[in-house]
Image 1 (cartoon, rainbow, N blue to C red):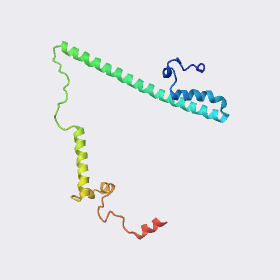
Image 2: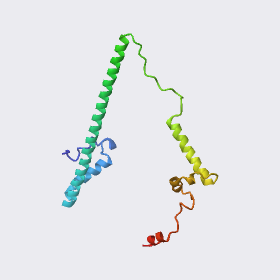
Image 3: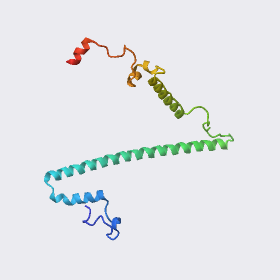
Image 4: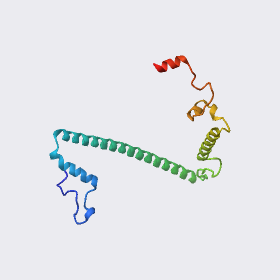
Length: 170
């Protein structure tokens, strides 16, 4: 139950401040029009609300499960951190020098993004060169050449086979 017809409005002097959003107002109007609905329309409306409710419950269950997983992961990470800090403190008390984990070196080698970019650029340049006719390296690649629309050679083109032609006509 949601109160009376004025349950959703806080004040009428504020203009848009106290009014309901358009989507909520449509729901209120639809609720007020239930007296004019036929039994079939009422059943459809109830089925629609039931579906929406079931979707909301399923979403809520999934969200709760994700929250629980994240909380468990956080707790495990906290335990691991506390264990590492205790181990480090114990080693420092024994007089052993504890060094912090090494940070990855900057500028040493190519990153994955750079490597991927180089592969994509090389492929695009090979496609352009093949299209212009200056090289034909991609035409000879069995699957890739056909996907890109290159005409390879006569052995990969559809051969004129009378048996295959009669099957196509059937």
